[in-house]
Image 1 (cartoon, rainbow, N blue to C red):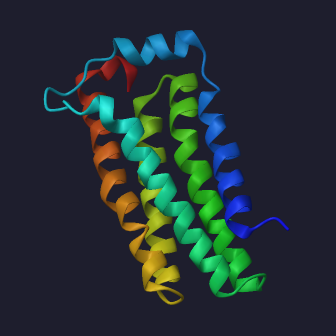
Image 2 (cartoon, helix red, strand yellow):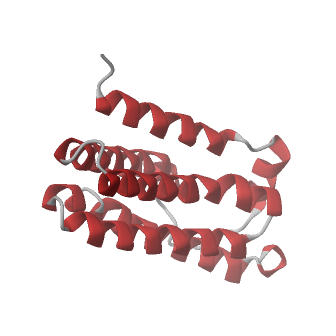
Length: 157
């Protein structure tokens, strides 16, 4: 029998693969952009997002196991999925449109969805809500960084 954590992890992995829908010219566009001087941790960003996604998947697993296959749980799973899709969309959509403003908007949207999800999940499980805190801490940093890059690179706003 397939375990719920396998399904949740598989969905997270499949959706995350969509972040690779970028071309070399998309990467070149982003690489040529100037960064804020304080952005010294750029190499750690993939590791940070990996931790954030693992925590989010673990949170979803807790919620599913608490009340499996109920309407409320399915709605929450939909919110988790929406959050991941919006988060993953940041890179390919921003790169394709070559717009830091779009990236900032997507980042803010993800943060808003996560706030709604965390508040809703808190009524079901404190641990599941706590596992969303890494997203709530990191997402504003990433969004602010993109906004700062927009100020430094107005031609790519």
